[in-house]
Length: 204
Picture 1 (cartoon, rainbow, N blue to C red):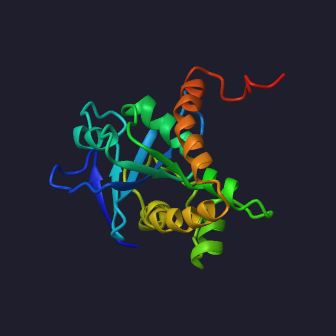
Picture 2: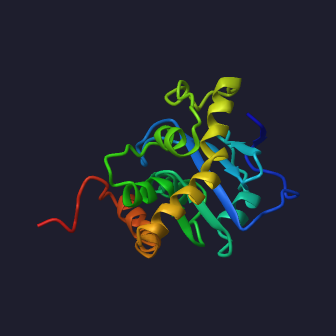
């Protein structure tokens, strides 16, 4: 895996592009309990930029904030609901267009397909992902090469997956619906951060 590791922020010399893939690694999946440990980004050039956050760092990641708040950059996630919430809580709000490959897959691939990142890479790109380090200790001071490679792979293929999923969404006449769903993620994240993660407020 081709990646670069930084501490607490990436350098100001990093050139932004119009679309960026983003993922996060945390100590767990509880927004209120578990801290953000790593943010991964990729601009579609086969290089993953990994930003590791020290537990007690007081420094603001100003360059990452600039990227996240840029309204002209599309942010691509897999299961964006969690990543957006954890970024909102720990770094800043995320502006600009949102794209979620998990939502896109659920809308486009309604024939019984599975929708995990591993399944999407296998089905659409013929790539097998190694998920061994998924539940490892991301809060460790020094991350292993296995962890860093795992983190990198979570963003390296999102651009290609977006292209494949867009083809199906367009073919099936669901692209506009998908865009509306992506936009609604910002509201879903607000609900999650207010404590409504487990409650469907639209249910009877």
